[in-house]
Figure: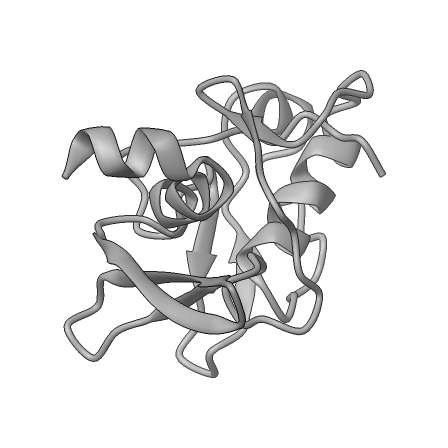
Length: 131
């Protein structure tokens, strides 16, 4: 869809105004431009953090742009609960990044946010340099 998602390093979901509901779904807590428009705005609940972040971006009227982090295009996945290909939540609450190389699954690392893990999956050279 090409929306510019609002990333946040201080949010456990990795996205501004997106939080996880007790049900495991994701919702928005309007802030910034959306809070000024309507502090009681409810856009629904979403299956992944990425879907909620996209709803926020659409409601905020963001111009189209690639979904990326630190200049790296991220691999989105509608079938992953995190919204990213190769990223899953670990029992510790952190995010595990894995990718396939030559038909074998390779552990990339453990990250604080899903966005950081997705960046490591999308950019193997940066992940290796950070290790």
